[in-house]
Image 1: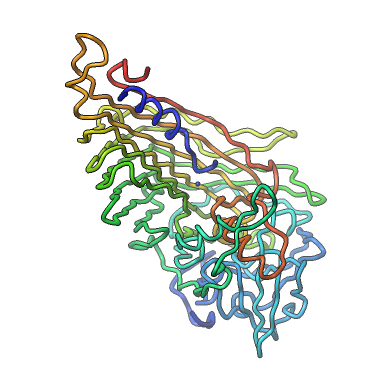
Image 2: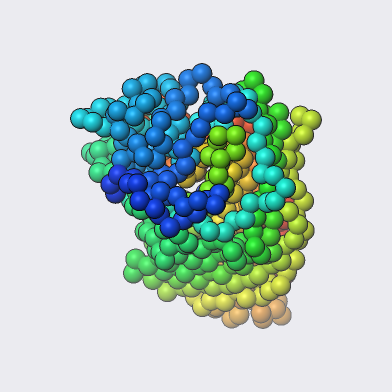
Length: 497
């Protein structure tokens, strides 16, 4: 029985993946410098303004809001509704169907615009890069862009960080018969909070979907520590994509509204470090199954390139799934793996491809560290996706070059009583252990957002009778996905059967 359960956990659960996870801007200085000058407080909060340039042709339905960050009064934490000065040049042209381009972060297709006094609240949906730029060639130059001096933008309080709102939005998805489940209170009716002022460096912690998260970026790598405790299930986990002085180089060419060349290289990848610990007081009576995005957008302003204000950013998604069979069970493990080579992808002569990553090479094995005590079998899966984005826009709605690395880990441990009930005559060590590690990469030019965010945003947009947004847009669509490493291990050997 222990064999079959452990094999089922590792076969069915471990294969889960992230891809299947105040006030006006002001004119004072912010203390943050880009291109040799200090940003204004508004630019620090909302991003640099675009400028017209002879080397770039924008699409005809793009509206530049003159005044940039100085015209912005506030932004909601989800990045979807921008309140701007109604007197700013271009504000009157922001009607549904147009594309707003106000700042590096304020870019999107208008789905609603409502004037109130001297301001207008503009709600936007994500767009692909070619919906903004018709012609232009952009490059980082000879020196790569360092991923340091990071600014952290928080979307804590956005609807998709609230587990109840997520549950309601998922319940409202159309049934096979085309009907939606009625709700007593729609997520669109919930109070939306304003985006807080960003901070230089990584934040101390944030909350999302019942988890307390401490994210980190970027000098030593990108990652996060997670903690969950509801007195029934307790989880402590951490994943770090280790990096040594990360930086990036890019090239993007658009002609006639089509991508003709694209390349994103991220340097400094050094390894993957994982640790996970989980316990349950109630066993099989309840499991945890959460997929969420960490509500921190780590961003580094690149500056203006032919009038376009590019930003290099890193976002993170997480999937956590437990499988406990007995009360007071627990399982824990940790591992570290080295990688080398350039992260990224390129498009040349009609073909797409990802750079080859060396490794992962085992420094300490997940399997060797699996521990836990229980009268039943227990398992946990942790999937962690880091996406590097180079482009315009904010959060997962950024339009441009996107490269993701997905680390999927799973650990399982059989019953501590198994040693008394050998499955094979004469075999006494049946304390089964299993561990898996899978590393995938994803890439595209356009935008891509997590499924949970898509569901919540689409349910919210119903209030405007807006067309539902897709999970991704651009090319390739859906984004390409490539497996670079996959390994599952079991001990003793009979546990895999």
